[in-house]
Image 1 (cartoon, rainbow, N blue to C red):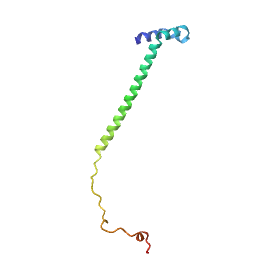
Image 2 (cartoon, rainbow, N blue to C red; image 1 turned 60 degrees about the vertical axis):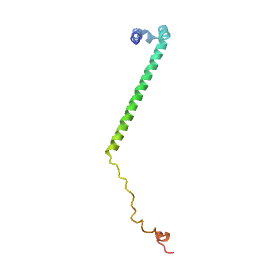
Image 3 (cartoon, rainbow, N blue to C red; image 1 turned 60 degrees about the horizontal axis):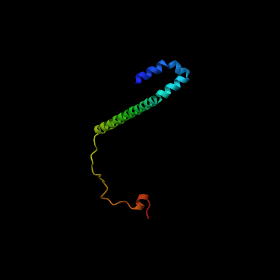
Image 4 (spheres, rainbow, N blue to C red; image 1 turned 30 degrees about the vertical axis):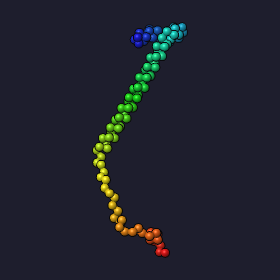
Length: 99
């Protein structure tokens, strides 16, 4: 079907270039098919772009996952405050003034 239409267009190329009645007649006969084919081509292009972007996203996610696997995990150690036994300084001592 597609080959036949392509052959028709190629054989009528000179007439189409000049325009006129044959172009209108061809579009009346095959316009809906051409429109449908154009819609299908645009859908295939969008699908291809979507798949490419999904592949890129998967590649980035796997790179992040590999990077996080390479990085050693931090140990969870309790925070030690060496001055916890000492009382907090008085407000006057912090400013360096005696009252």
